[in-house]
Length: 240
Ligand SMILES: *Cc1c(COP(=O)(O)O)cnc(C)c1O
Image 1 (cartoon, protein in one colour):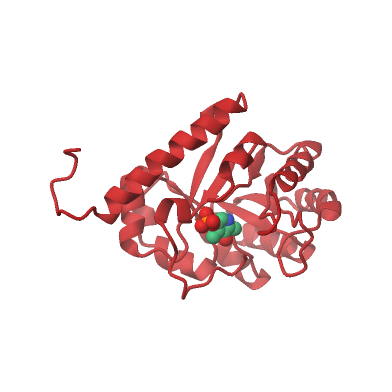
Image 2 (cartoon, helix red, strand yellow):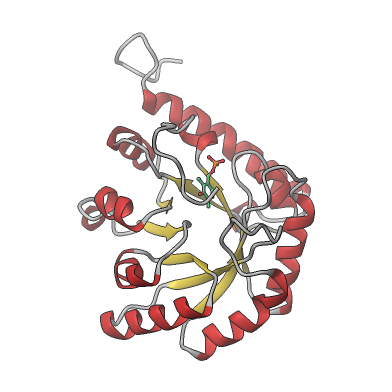
């Protein structure tokens, strides 16, 4: 343990690399147990509400794929950093309002939260305007929770067809299972929707259930707490 030359208390960056090592070990084990290549699963670091030191620490460990909930907050965190990190990948994982579509298309490489017809038109118009075509996932509300974003499972296929027809680059699906239910059935449902629509990307699994998600085919797990520790509770996430 002679890694750090600095203070006697562990730095936040040391903590973060320790957590990352443990997470990667668990991700790899879950993938292998399911007969999958560990390299087929990407860790999306959910950086919402994190202070600049935590972002710098995450970048220093080599993490390059980040998930953000809000367009404006993400602009503040990433616009200045982005030019120095050519291989950065930013993913929008929170609800998107149609009137923020242009800003979202300008900033994000992947938009994971397409969930309604109106947003298809706004994203298509933003693509035309900016000449930029982010990859898009359709968010499915697998638990049919009225307060939560996402298209209902029975409407997902039609939304995918219509998004493709409008010129969006649909590459997968995303879900946030109900907090109080066993997530496995939700992951399985999402995987089924992806398969029947010929989609290869499955964004599912968070800090509490990512190993189960990987066993059921997740290609992207979205980890906040497990990686960064508890978020500042005064900045509430908007979607859960
Ligand atoms: C905040 C958030 C996460 C990360 O949640 P943790 O439980 O902290 O890992 C993942 N996905 C979405 C959509 C989120 O809003």
